[in-house]
Length: 258
Image 1 (cartoon, rainbow, N blue to C red):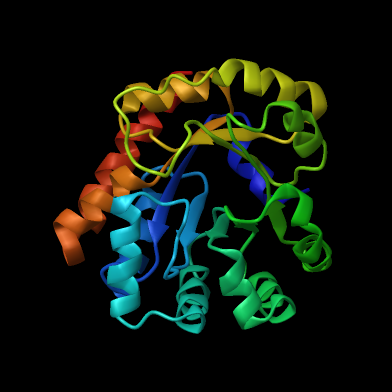
Image 2 (image 1 turned 45 degrees about the horizontal axis):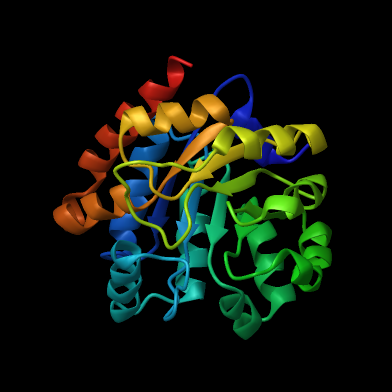
């Protein structure tokens, strides 16, 4: 069974996103551990990229800060090796296809297996083009995670049928960032997913409050939060681990009631 599935067993999953190297890798390690200790069920680790097309200003700025600090893919691999000494929950990388192409897909995905990365999320990889990574991911037991957006419509069933790990439901059109209200009909998207697969699904993009997280997780199997966490890291810098941990605990507690 996919290790990612364990994050969704008998509970609604809370999934924080953290940009590696913002403000530095030492802080990232502390923040990841704080998130895991405070109830995160799965963690998305962002590998910074110079042109993160799916990201809004908050995460774009985190990418810029991390790259300016000299973060590299190899240093992030070393970070994960260190985290895996004590962090046991599933972890996935979120990055862009170019990062993997430039590193070499076989080498990159093979290293993911070696260091204990359970999945890959590539927002700029269209479903129709996933074949070039899918076989390598399958060979190395790394889930290539599918994204379904409000624009997916008649493609939702097709994407769901082939999904592995979990399905990332994009709640809103546009880029990442907190939103005061999420108006997408998530329930109807989830209904189509459920009719075609038993792979769990979680909602991301725009969630920042416990109420939003609980609402989105009531339709699906979990909630994903990025920008609201990155904002806290930007505000607290090297001292971000404690406030992020407290926020994760608050968000997870909101999901425990479902």
